[in-house]
Image 1 (spheres, helix red, strand yellow):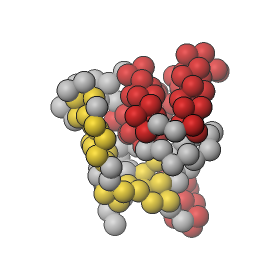
Image 2: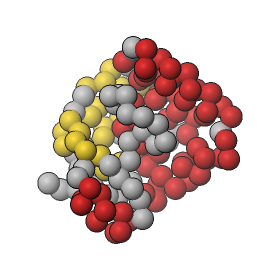
Image 3: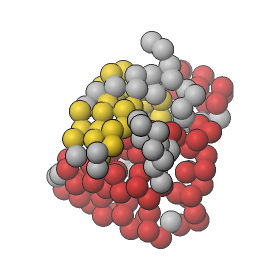
Image 4: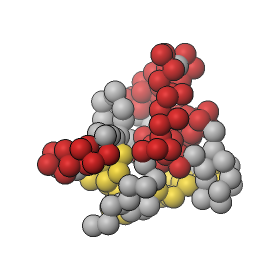
Amino acid sequence: MLLIKGQKKKLCYLYRGILERQTGYNYSWIVTQPYHYSFANKLITVPKGFVCNGATWAPDIESDSWLIHDWLYCHQKFDDDYPCSRHIADFIMIEILKEEGGIPRSMYRWAFSVLVKINPFKVFDKAWGEGKKSGTEILIKE
C-alpha cells in the first residue's frame, strides 16, 4: 500500500457557510493537489477540488485517512470503476492509520475499528447511503 500525499486546506467559515446553504452538507476541507493511494492492486485518486467534512465527530489528528475514506464513501469505487464496499473503505482507513503510526493514530484506529463493527444507530450505513449523494458532484475549481 502506498499513499502519495497531495495537499488539502481548511475552508474558511464564509465559504463553508455558502457550501452548506447550497448543498446541505457541512464541508470543512478542500483538496488542492490530488492524493493517490494504492490498495491491493487498486488505485484511489482523490482529485483536486474535492470537498469533504474531514474526521466526522472526531478530533483532527493530522491524518489523511479520512480524506481517502470520505472519497470512497462518496465515489464507492476504485479508479478502474471496480466497486468498493463500505467494509473495504473502512478497512482502508484503518490500514492508512496503521501506516501513519503514532499514539493518537493507534488510539483513533482502535476506536474507529470498534465503532465500524458495532455501527451505532447505523451511522456508517447511513453515511454510505448518503455519501453518493453528497460528494462526487462537488469538485470546486480554484
